[in-house]
Each structure stands twice: as structure tokens, then as C-alpha cells.
Length: 256
Image 1: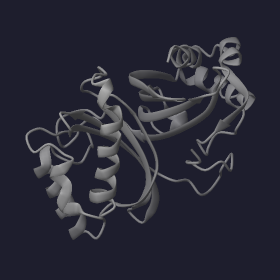
Image 2: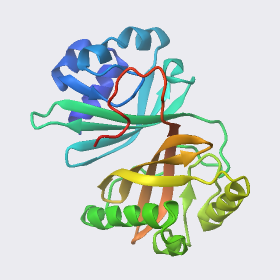
Image 3: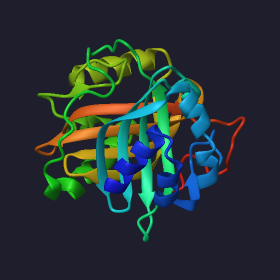
């Protein structure tokens, strides 16, 4: 993970030499608005420098070759809004170089329904021996509840005692989920998850990356869950429409 920390520092300072040292020349880019390749990425630095765009890393964890970051981007107008929240996933190759990047971004909002921010909450990674069990729980939650296979099983995955919610429009707890589902269903606008593309976990944190429909658009859903004692007790997310126009590469937002 030290490589990724150094990479973010280099991006924040537009340190081209360090980026060349850390990133594979054929760096594969899955942000569809950015051309693929290391040189194309470095070509963005003058814009980042002009706007003073910087990433503030909130949490980070690794699973095999993949490193997950939960970031706040400040002065982020080039990315879509003055402040943005993102999940960034980097793949490290066998030579220790950053070889591939996926992300999803959404504007940072001033107020959320739960009163929590989109990024606050615990960051400590614990329960490393529970990584695979928690990844299985996260997968089951998406399949049973969000993909609709067995929605009545929700309490098999989510704690009925404590569930801290960071989605900007949903209240805490199971009651908050039920209220949101009732409202969205009444508007004929319920989330429809159709495929899980990747599950990445380390100890008590698991990120699922899924595809589906919402608000009449195909979306990517990044859902980060924190687990305690076999139940999800906290949730953060980023939902982004999948671009279909003015694409800078053809790599798709998936392809893990």
C-alpha cells in the first residue's frame, strides 16, 4: 500500500518523475473520461495544478493485487464539482507497478439525511481472519437484497442493532433502509442491481462494485460495508451513471 500512498502524494504535487517510477507505461484507465496510458494521465497534471486539485485519502485497504481508496477530492471542478467523493481501485502488477485504475465519483454534499458525512466513520482495519467470511456476507447482501433474490434475508447480513448510513439520502438503521425502499418503490425508481463485477475486502471492510439501473440510467454502484460480529454495521457508497458519450477510452468501467 506504500506504493499507492506515494502515488497519491505524487498526483497531488504533480510529481511527474515519481509517477513514471510507480506507474506502468501501459497503465489501463477505466475512468471513461480520461485517455488510457501513463503519458495521457500525466497530461492531466497542468489542469490539476491550475485548479489546485488534490486528493484527501480517508481510508485505504488491500486485497491481493488490488488497493482500494476512499477519497475526497478538493478543488475538483475538473472532475465534475468543487468537491467530490470517490472510490479509487488500483491494481498492482507482478513488478510492483500500478497497472490499472477504476473509480466512481459523486459530488460531496453539505448535508445528508442521517447527519453523517459521505466519508466519516471508522478507518481502522481489524478482524483480518474474517476477510473471506465478510466478503461472502457482502456478496450475499447484494445478491439477496439488492438484486432481489431473497430480500427477506436482509437481517442475515445487516445488524438490527446498529447500522450507520452514509448514503446522502437514507437514514440510519434497518428502518432507514425500509423507508428509502418504500419511497423509491412508490416513485417507481428503486435501485436495480443486475451484476456484481468485483468484491474486494480486508478484515472488517468490504467493497462491492456492481452494475444496475436507477433513475432511468445504467449506473455503477460502489458499496463499502464495515462488519462487526458477522453483520454489516456501516455503509458508504458512490453511485455514478455510466458514461456513454464523449468517451476517452473503450475499457469500460469494469473488466476486472
